[in-house]
Amino acid sequence: GRLVEAARAAGAPVVFVGLETTPQTDAPTLLERMRRRGGDPEIERAICRAGTPGADFYGPVPGPSELVVRKPRYSAFVGTDLDARLRARGVDTLVVCGLTTECCVDSTVRDAFHRDYHVFVASDACAAYEPDLHEGALKSLGLSFALLETTSEIRAAWGG
Image (tube, rainbow, N blue to C red; front, side, top):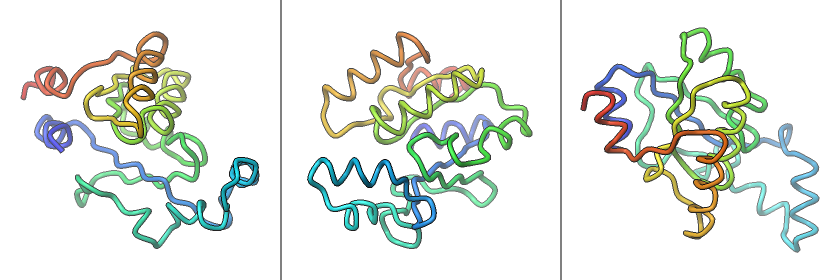
């Protein structure tokens, strides 16, 4: 929440990205992976189903003029027009935060880096289901794909 407030105060574009699935976007490979791990794809794929509470934003919510991207995969760039929308706004630098560090954040950061964005990860504004997954993902991202900063450091850079 503090990071969103700081971005808004600094006039930085704020983009909300949410995982939202539909029967048309369900990946057959993901469903098969769920089956092979002993899960029930009918239950698990419904977690972020469009039109259900699982696809809602929790915590900070988008403002009326802020960009909202609904993604069908872990990366915010796969199956969306995020790249085109950012480029149309002249954006070349991203500050990424969210859930989960080792999955959606990681996938988005790597894809952003490969699309030539300067990428910062707000290390204390991300989380994983387990602390070691969070730390491992941050270590990997910091080694090759992004600069890791705290929310306080980012707020200070924005003049907050």
